[in-house]
Image (cartoon, rainbow, N blue to C red):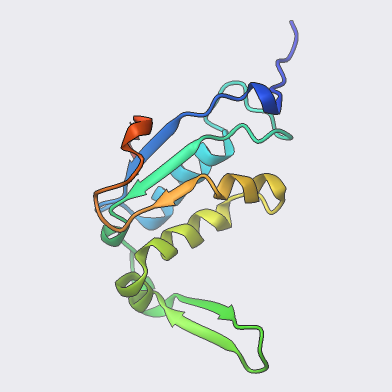
Length: 143
């Protein structure tokens, strides 16, 4: 019995849609990262980007448990001296809920070129409408 190794050229990508309404941010991010990595496929190959495309809708309705809205802080640096910026997740969820989901998913992807390429296949929308209806995405249930 031989092991099947996928090649970059033979990977066929499907589209999946995840409804994040009333779901925990971490569980939505885990489901999206697993599909983007391709770990849900039986022919998963670690050194090949065999992941698929993911659409996350209703990002503005995602839930953070406990006191994370007030205690969790996103830091980023502008590149200038003294340019460290801090944003609480309550403000982040009010202004850019898509960014909160993207940050959670990006943190769960590998820190290499495969993870960078996988992240480009993630589309996040704050509302229930998305632009990828022509791709006929398959709905995914988040547990």
